Image 1 (cartoon, one colour):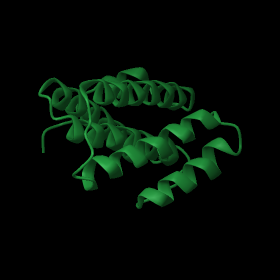
Image 2 (cartoon, helix red, strand yellow):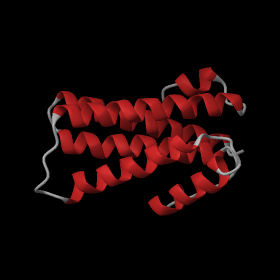
Image 3 (tube, helix red, strand yellow):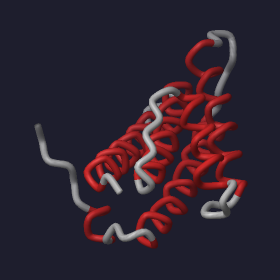
Length: 141
């Protein structure tokens, strides 16, 4: 396990979720949806690093998540669906300037991200990452 990468990705996931929630409060709904996706992406990457699996592209993260976590039964299939659905929403939010996102859309995406992070957190703990490590704030660079 690459513990440093697990924690770095986990911290980025938490930061992205905080940003998504802040953007929702500021009524920047499309940007909130985008950041909520990145929370899920980084949490998925953290789980993959438990198994020394690195994936850089968005499609690679989806593929590796399915192959290394869902297929062997380590993570339930519904969480893979969260990853796919959230990416679809992120692409619409980032690239479709004619689409409208509501406060409820952004809140729903943040809720989905919180649920995903909670599931990944329990997976990380089950695989040897201490709760205290997951709560630490990243050091300022």
